[in-house]
Amino acid sequence: MNDLILSAIRTLNTESQAILDLKNRIENNPNFGFDSAIFMINNCFASHGRVIISGMGKSGHIARKIAATMSSTGTPSYFVHPAEAIHGDLGMITQNDLLVAISYSGECEELLKILPIIKRQGAKCIAMTGKENSSLAKAADLHLDCKVSQEACPFNLAPTSSTTATLALGDALAIALLENKGFSKEDFARSHPGGSLGKKLLTRVSDVMRCENLPLIDKNTTLQETLLKMSAGGLGLVIVVDDLENQKLCGIFTDGDLRRSFLNNNVSEILQKSISNFMQTKPQIISPEKLATAAVEMMQRLRINALIVCENNRIVGALNMHDLFKAGVL
Image (cartoon, rainbow, N blue to C red; front, side, top):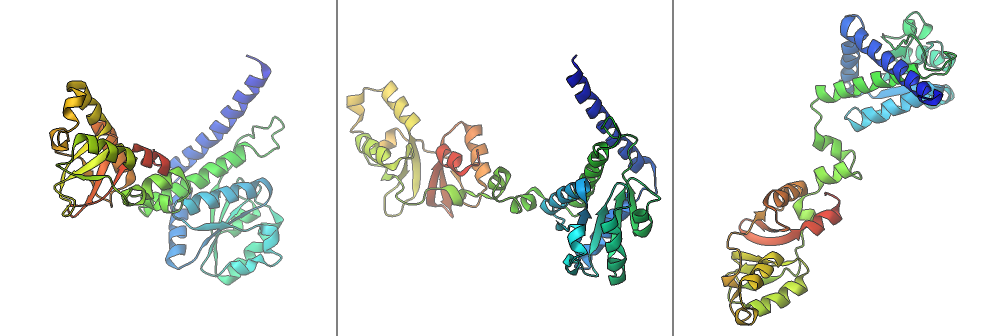
């Protein structure tokens, strides 16, 4: 094993140990304060306050990530740069807000300048530091201990293990808050409408179905006429109805049915027969209000490529696998 691989393993081992040590403190130290932090954040929202997360340097990067994770999991939060806060941005913080101040040393000058001001306003503060006797830890309403025994940096200087442990603690807070308030997959999707998960959890059949120029034929249409209608429809199927006026669903005829019909019969003899001789009489249907992912699951389970969409026993649309693929739910 070469030196580069050994270096990578040392770093990962050191940072893994930092997270494990943090886990043990939360698990075994009743005074750690994790549940108190959850209570304070929930109480902040109950008072119509907001969670502000702040830090300088590498701690600032971690603070931004924690704020983003909390916001995306049901705990609206935002990052405030402490240096900018003392030059005017403190106006964003109100008495009902909660400041999460992150500094491994606990001696960040900019944060220490902010703290007395927000406390005079009545806002609360949770400090996340690696030094329980630091100025920030002592001044905060609650201190969460993020100390690590060693940085992954060989000089024990560059923030590595400490930032990893702090980020992990922020994630733990975000997920505990998520679970505490019953935040659901649907809630998550609403804050991620542009992502693949949002599409899967928000897109309904009505959003992707085709509802205009549906390939409808009556049950007396010949197979030859059916083929022309199927080709023009572009869905790989035709929907068979009792008659075109009342449009009572009778069946479906697909590309697969066409191949089976030609395979088992003399082509020239069957072209003038009515489609009622070849259609599937129990077509699979789905409601327009169902999630598009339900249509995917149904098609895969039944090994079919298309569905008819019905509402109150009325044909309102149709869709196939290509429509679902195009919508990004596959």
